[in-house]
Length: 299
Ligand SMILES: C[S@@+](CC[C@H](N)C(=O)[O-])C[C@H]1O[C@@H](n2cnc3c(N)ncnc32)[C@H](O)[C@@H]1O
Image (cartoon, rainbow, N blue to C red; front, side):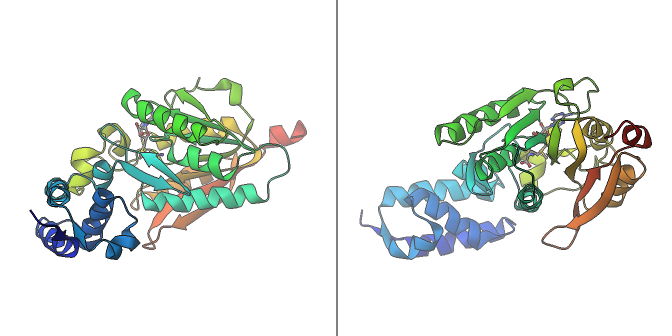
């Protein structure tokens, strides 16, 4: 069979994805074509004709995307900062909105004194935030915590891949971020905590890509979305140095509650809400301040 125009296949694919209710049909059609052909999306125009078996493989992927399998499960890759992460069944796919918290952490670390900063990523999933921060700040000591063994297998794979690329290795801990006895060795030692925990209120309506493919443990935080965040906040107070900073991503419906949770504890100050790209409240930041007793002890 003769070679076939890729552009035509992309147009057909975009139509099919649109009919299937995929939110960004043209983008996904192009990204999957780029994946199959093995070029950057911006260079698809340089590939006018492809072999029939390429079209066949492309159509098979498009059919799965039309079934609402997440795009990143089909390409096997997601990104955070300057790094790629391997993703697939069993692990939460890192989202673009979390890039904002990553940028916030980098900005906080920018003004950091010379000693190696200690960073803690809670609920790390693929390791997205921990590994992107280790990549951007090779001087940092990065710890990451994940509870789910299935997710942790992906974290390990990604951590190994980044270390092979020459990034400073991170330290992974399997544990529950709500456990009061977790990581006692890090008490008062952490400069920056970042966390994108499970935060969706149970029963919320979700796109099929999320509801059917992201692990349940990665998504839901009890009836109000705060069942992990509330106890985790007490642990963050324990781990942060006085003056250290933290950020927690949250649902757009419960940002006020997370900020209130932090404000009502005397150990946190400078509580501030950050919006996402759509202008919705998305993550809350705060600084660990000294209590009166700590101040009296000279902290
Ligand atoms: C929303 S995902 C975020 C993953 C990653 N931080 C990211 O931004 O791509 C939340 C992650 O927290 C993990 N998790 C859920 N409950 C946890 C707990 N109590 N302790 C530690 N990890 C937990 C889930 O398995 C999942 O990997």
